[in-house]
Structures are given as structure tokens and as C-alpha cells.
Image (cartoon, rainbow, N blue to C red; front, top):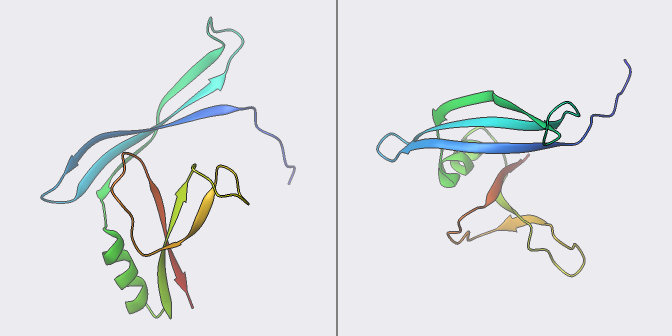
Length: 111
């Protein structure tokens, strides 16, 4: 197959609602792509993806990995705050994840 570069685009994650009793979350992904024919130079692809799922907690996910046979399960945090050797990006295991307005975590299983 042929590999083709994609033009730049913006990605938007929209959280429409969350039910704390059932842990269900409803989200959508939208894209803004370059479009020279539009006045602002961009075209919105609204609702490109839509999700309605149960939001599992980090402890539930790490426990599920251990039950599935992984030797170790870790939570890794991603942030734009940076470190001296990695400006604007930090990715690695954490034991605590303080509440913040926005954060991204990865649950990693090690065999």
C-alpha cells in the first residue's frame, strides 16, 4: 500500500454527559480540517465518532489486567507540563494522580 501524508487538522473531544450512579459517559469526537473554500479556512466534521460506554476506574482496570494474567499493571500519566529532558511531555508510571481539570492516563499491563 501507499502511505500518504494527511493535512493538518484539529481534534475535539466533547463530553456530553456523565452519570455517576452508573458510570456511563457519553462523548463525541469532531474534527476541523483545512478547506480553502470556507471563509475561515476550515470545515467541521461534526460527530465523526460517538461513544456511550461505562467509564471504568483506574483501580478496576489495573485489577482486571492482573486477573487476566499480567505480572504487573501500572498507571501512566501524560501531561503537557514537561520535564527538563522532555519539554512539554511527561509519560511514565505514577502512584497518585491528583484531581485536575484535564488529565490523560494510560493503564499499562506488563507480562
